[in-house]
Image 1 (cartoon, rainbow, N blue to C red):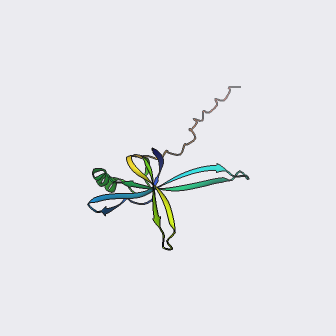
Image 2 (image 1 turned 90 degrees about the vertical axis):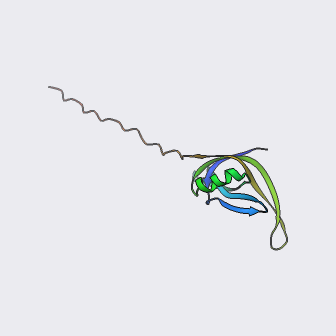
Image 3 (image 1 turned 45 degrees about the horizontal axis):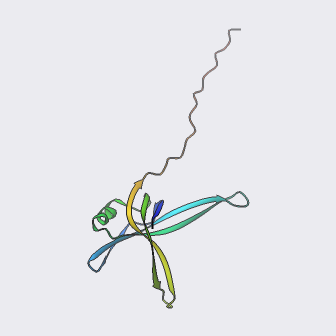
Length: 124
């Protein structure tokens, strides 16, 4: 299975030890927008948990990826089941990282500046 998202990092990646392995986790927000019935803009944001088990990549993630960075993430979707305090089981989706590319957000487009040519005065 494959999952690909482009979004913004929600917090600096965190490193934790699981047995003898190191895991890095962080979240990425993706947004989509549409027009509502009254032509207002409705924006919906989804948060995705990203998990990396690659020991070499993890050091780069910690050093180079930061809150607010725009990233392109490729990975595989995995669901984990866990129990909350009342014993109820919940499912959580996470993307197991295969590759990550940092991106630059696109600049807002500016109106091209038009050169104002002065009209020459007619001699009459």
